[in-house]
Image (cartoon, rainbow, N blue to C red; front, side, top):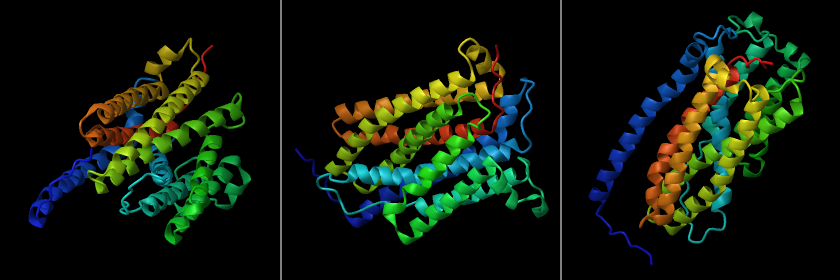
Length: 336
């Protein structure tokens, strides 16, 4: 049985629609500074009392990695949701405007800044003379940084030209580069660590970006059965993505903090404290996802699940910011 929504005259329809838009704009204006403050102020809070020393400019590096991770989520999420929507019956022609170009442009700026840090010997350059572009080709980290720069540049070109078929490969190259960067050859079993990071980052990007694009799509499909079907498809895949993110995250943590020391390191090291904050946030996201799934299956109007889904998007944004901070902090010592 299909519910038919009563029509309203244009004057009545335009009034209520503007208020949520203003509310969303205010929420974004409040959340963007929060997303900036987490990586900028997080290092001092995480390092307080640990006796650890972070690299110079750790706050700026954490912010750049947050931007880079967010720039990965948006284009991958758009491609993911478009694939989920393919073949659904009664799909409306309306589609949300793509955010791939501004996202990849931001990612390109972040990748260029991170490459300049690598070229200066992992120090924040204060003048152009400190940036050795040619030196990037001589080190493993430099080559990976250049790969990320070129991948985001190619992704931006694909977004401008509308080459949808090729849009998957540049973000995939960035994910591979990040997985390799996070686990240098000197690490024990670096290929295992890179494989775990590859799966973890891919699933997290699909989960976060996919939910963002799903919520944006449902705003254009009010009362449409295809919207309910799309949300249902996303929810089923998101459950698998959450399981993969959890499993790879736990395994990666145990590799860096052995079981015998993990409880101590979660409270006495900057990495452990930040990881604990990320675990709490992910647990909150999981509860919001469960709430949305219950509403989707039991509510008279399944699209009421959009309310917890929007809250889940905000919480996932905080997870991305904490992940950027986590990637910039010193790794914990493997205690014996």
